[in-house]
Amino acid sequence: MAFIADILLISGALSATLYCFILSQRLRRFTDLEKGVGGAIAILSVQVDDLSQALRNAEAASLASANGLAAETRSAQAAAKRLELLMASLHDLPETLPTDPQIDPFFVRQPAAAEGAL
Image (cartoon, rainbow, N blue to C red; front, side):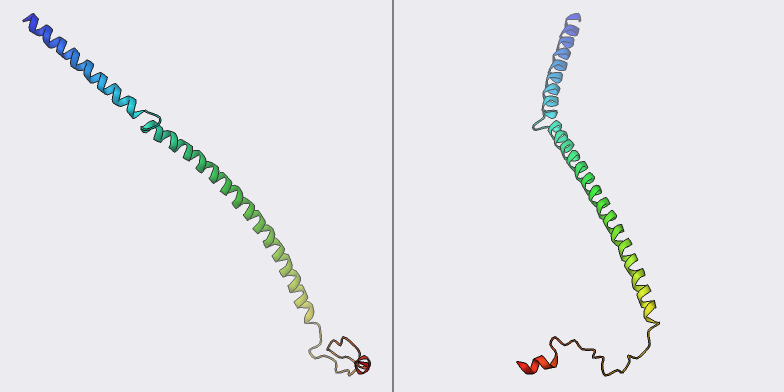
């Protein structure tokens, strides 16, 4: 009886050894940096770093654009105030132009006397 128990104990130990050996081989392949999950984790880590850098660049660009847009808005508001002031000052002008024959509203490059000389 003791002999049979020894044989069963040895076979159990051998099967546990074989199981541990197979498990160690699978774990080594699983954590391989080139083919296994370890490699996938390394690649994903690099991609996360790249995306974080791209996000920082996008934030900086959007902040610069927002600052530029705010400056342009302030400039446009100042121009609108000046235009409103000019439009308000136009209300003080008379409705019709004076009918003075000496005032010609058209621009003449050369006087009429010079045209006859050509």
